[in-house]
Length: 454
Image (cartoon, rainbow, N blue to C red; front, side, top):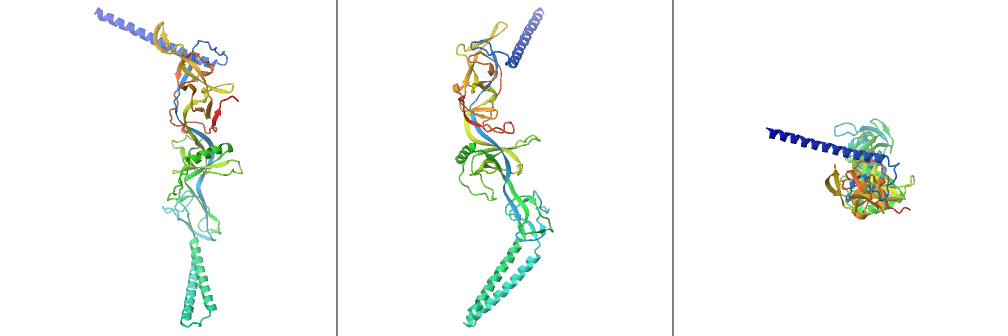
């Protein structure tokens, strides 16, 4: 019994020691973090450490990874239909009826129509009468011409050349009048030249209409164009990328919709400030056409982006943002907040293993707990970079360092010992895609910026 009681007492004592050590460790870590926060707030008042300072500098690290990145140029533009048609009758008259949908409803704005579908019909009673008159005149002219021709064959010289020529001319005139009457009847029907959507209906049944007066407007919106203006300073780079990605000419689809003419990728998103964007809010298109001359109104070169729009989410007239993939590279992406500018040169600080003392001991309450690498600060000057949004894109990093200091770097000098307070995850996306949450507009990338300080 006494042995069991003694074991229980020893167990309680050991448990108390473990709890005490754990509590002291939590207090130690919490105190270090609070000290880090206080030092972050007081950086403006504290003196910069000397290169020989041995005080640990609290920092936060990010591990960089080399990955495929897309370099983007961003512009705003207006959605336009792929094609638009303003339809009118070729003659004056009175609207007898309007076309109907498959459900039997009268055609109206927003209804889909197919190629050759009747949109409206004129009153054809007078036209039918004129066609009957033309057919009768043609029949008389044919009969007279046949009679004179037969008489000429039976009795040469019985019919003069003048009379026969007049009969021939009358037959030609009657034939032409019959063709005109038939054409007028055809023009009494207003049909859709291509499949599309009615954007305007400007007439009603019973109204009178003049020749060439617009009656319907049809737009093709299953595919749309986003038109943006590109400045002179960027159009050459875009034209070069367009030329490199141009496809061989392909036959047009049976539906009349054009195929993409290039693999010049563009990400397009709608501006939507009233609600959150859905997952399909970012669409991918291709450059369809580039202007050869500058627009006289704004001094910009118009570039058209072809987009599939099966759900008709992109309405003509809407403003959208286009991110043109002007280049694809292998490189590193670093947050702009981690860059330290000194004498107009861009620098990064990395955590590296100290060459003098590669390891250090972690002790607690006088006891050595573990041996870990001793990290010190290493400043690296960035010779070239691409500034894009809230990130710098680097094709390479001198020294191939990976542990980037993203917090606490403004107090660092080369060789200062570091105390790692935490890490932040790096972007794991394979491409620098606009699907990453960013602001509604991104400034045009600063490509191949020379970090010379001039």
